Image (cartoon, rainbow, N blue to C red; front, side, top):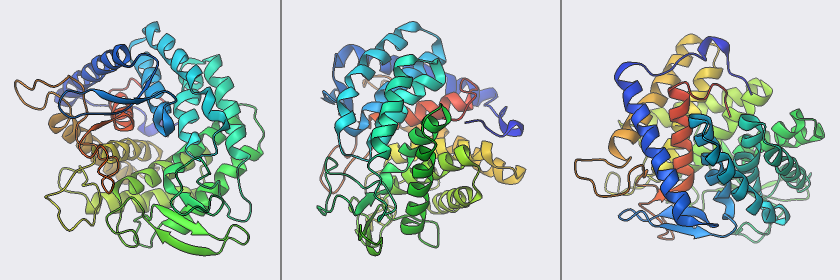
Length: 392
């Protein structure tokens, strides 16, 4: 993907430049410590006090974000140790090719395709193409999308008719593979998948449902809901809003289809209007306990990254400035208040992005460091400091 040239040189200056550069150093240190601690495992979430990671041998749906951080670290430093770490971890993700899970798009886009884009990495390119082919093969014509999948933890049991907006950003894998000489039908599957999610999940005001259930034979809508949110049928789960926004921005970047841009603008404007003053969202926008409830820095970091990309893609200067300023403000808040150390004498491991909320309804990692939050904050910082010239 390429960004609009007139906006590509917008990078931090002055105090922001020093703040963001220091944040990158902290995050790189955290990557080094994590790599030494996890061995051949993949980090998922880290406890908020000691920073000890919960891990999984196959990375689950988050494994690509750890490998993606290593590709970003290579981009930031040119230190070949990160290439070696990324390739070793990427090889361990191969077992996921056989999994029936739409979130494999995230695994192989961030884990594999980024290596091909940033490093011309042959292993990343090969595994990315294989991941794209396996993912596209699961498209269901009647549903109009790639369903959640039998290996996804489906909440309804209808693996062919249920989908989550969480899987929308992973469609970058298909557009990338089509561009790199793959079957052009991959791009068409990606386009249909994202468009269908906009039609199903985006409310008229720009907010998003997390999930949809349709009849897989004729595509008729059976239910729209947010199973991970506060109130499944009505509330807006923060991470649903950020997944959708990121996916719509990516879709526009790859296709230049105005339909995707307009959906991204609606989602972005809704977030900006509804988020707290510092831009760091609570886990669900409709939790009646706000402000006495959990934040979600992982959704917020994703949104900051998406806003910065949307700014570079916007052709209207005022609109571009609006999203650039909003994205930078969010990054300042995350770095200043949630990236360790957050206060003098903070004993926690440096570079942890605290207060990510994975699954609040299940009481799972509700105030923790989350690997995808780390990824998106680092990507946003590299964009803001000019160390990442292209949009991913």
